[in-house]
Length: 237
Image 1 (cartoon, one colour):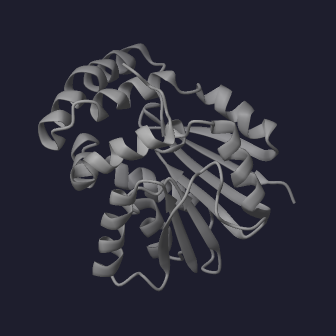
Image 2: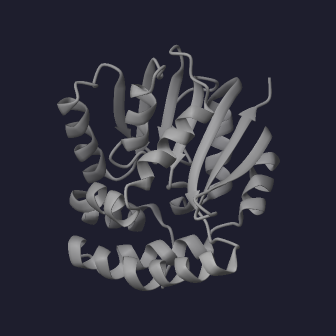
């Protein structure tokens, strides 16, 4: 499976499945994706005054979670380069009357359209592995964070426990692509998902990358038997 990550390819793929993206996320994770997002937002320790950037926002679920938490962010900006995903996200914001607190804009994770030290926290939900230049994106995140600002990244991983790993491999490589193709009618997207997870950095490799670009207090926390990791870090003060 081709796991090349040119912006045009990734944006086109996600635009093609945008209409079924939320349904499939909840269905294929048995609804656990909502819990993962809540854990990511809790790790930010928001007080109600923060400006939060949700990078690779997709249809805005993590941005919404950050904006509606109790306490939640004062302002949230979601950035993504897939226009169809953003349009669906905007419809969700309008329906929930959240457009005054949460905004969505089109942009590239490796060239974030924000000034230096302009946000208090950054989140990414299952998007960092889709960025062509992961290190450049991490450097950009570090640039836009204020001193002491927090980072929370959710990303899939390959479990290390043998039984879980076997079950996970069967589900991710056999079951998930079939369901994804049936509902989305897109042949490539749900084959790309397991391939991209296998090709992404290991948790320790990603921790090392975050440290390399300047983050401190970096942790990789396994969730749901290591199917997902929550990476938390801070920009030094």
